[in-house]
Image 1 (cartoon, helix red, strand yellow):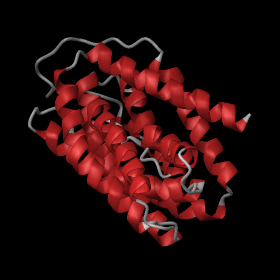
Image 2 (cartoon, one colour; image 1 turned 30 degrees about the vertical axis):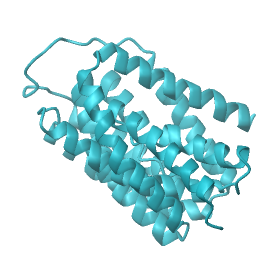
Image 3 (cartoon, helix red, strand yellow; image 1 turned 180 degrees about the horizontal axis):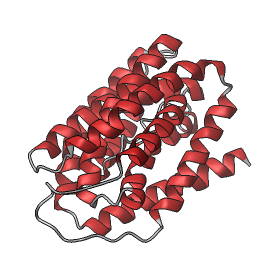
Length: 260
């Protein structure tokens, strides 16, 4: 793939937008970057990336975006270590298996997996959520067994599409585990970071890694993700929930239109 300045700027812009959103709402940003990487370059006359290549570039970018966002949230005491461990370990195991196994799947199966995950996440975001106003986040309780099973399932599926699966782990935390929004966002960034290690290693071993697009997206992540996290800490919780719901819904519509 030839080095074209316009192509590099396009990739950087996609990475920047995805990473601001990643830091703001606690997702790896794949839900935004996956469709953008798939559709924007060919729309502007650049070579199209395959679904396999897009998922590999996404995996690397998510790793750095969540790492940068996590450091920005760490100071507020919003990261729940017990939740991160309960969900992080099963997710990394599942995402490694999914990431490595994805090389045996056709592009259509990868896109369908992604579409189904996004649809489930969208439905969950519109379910009613009770949000207690609190200043102390140290006494949050949740069902550990449910957290572990949900995380392992999400890890496997998200490994296949190269997303770290945070666009579905945040709705699971909010709706199923009843975790407060800011804690769900911050803990999700930590879990997604752990998950992206497995996905990235799996994708590299699967042989789909593109060096230049990955480096460009990583540069964008390191700049933009902390900016998003800073914005997210200042925003109203309901606004954050609606941004996440809108993003997931838009992606669902676009992907299902393509599949159908």
